[in-house]
Image (tube, rainbow, N blue to C red; front, side, top):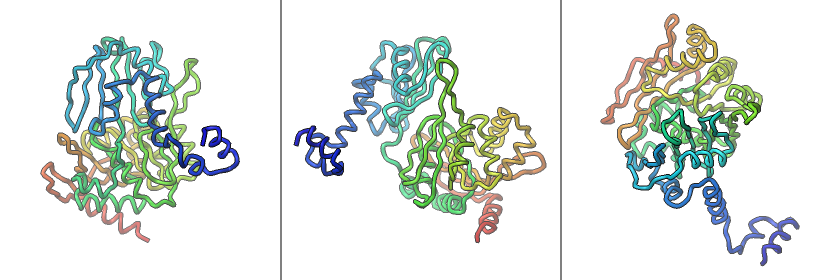
Length: 369
């Protein structure tokens, strides 16, 4: 059957499966062809494209001098390849992500070829041409059971996390860069019942949980005329009008924390968001810093956070191993927001209980019907 005949069959109402049943080019091949064409337009050819499609490579880092470093299996490895014009490559990558990158807007974040996160910064903010960071999404979305089998979740931690998820707790997933916050959050969302409606808000699409009822929102920067920007705060407010069962913020990094906490204090439950922090104990300070960006006083932020947030799930990285190291609860003492450990896992895998465990159990009992 010719392509004209197939198009005619589709126009007559034939299903796509019937019309393309014996097509010489399958849907997967078409998708790969489209991906490769998009990559070529952005300047990602040859070895650079091969690196981004390597399941063992998580980061491709292009330095301003053209040298390239990758992270493979948790270790940084310098390569012999070089990029001749890093600035030109950065501009092409930004354009393929639909973002602006020039002297007036020298920093960009975006997503390219479907699942690769782009960050680039131009000179003179960086010495040389441009620094480009490309982070690939997981080729395989792990389930909670798989993460537990890989040692990322101690059985007691897994039990506690599942309990927080099932009872609609509001939780912060904290950790340093590359500890697996997005991987864990995606696995958690995938385990939710299919009837629940998930509203995911991000600066660039990274969370892609295999769940049938996901609405993904992405912020937008201003155009060349300085117009058209849509902030995370605006998306949070929009999401609340879209009947979410779960409100998910990919990462809290600015004034949008005010809108998230306000929503959680007005009846919205089951919210999860990630936050960069070196330890669970550092989370209050990070929240206070973000609250200050939104004009919230320390007392106001502490009151809202203590009332809205139930727990912290903190991840750590030990070489190639990434694991949940601590489960804690947030409490307010006077005007201070404090973290009380409930369960802690050492690098050797030993689990210890903390004073926050009783509070977590009491909260669980209180919320049971």
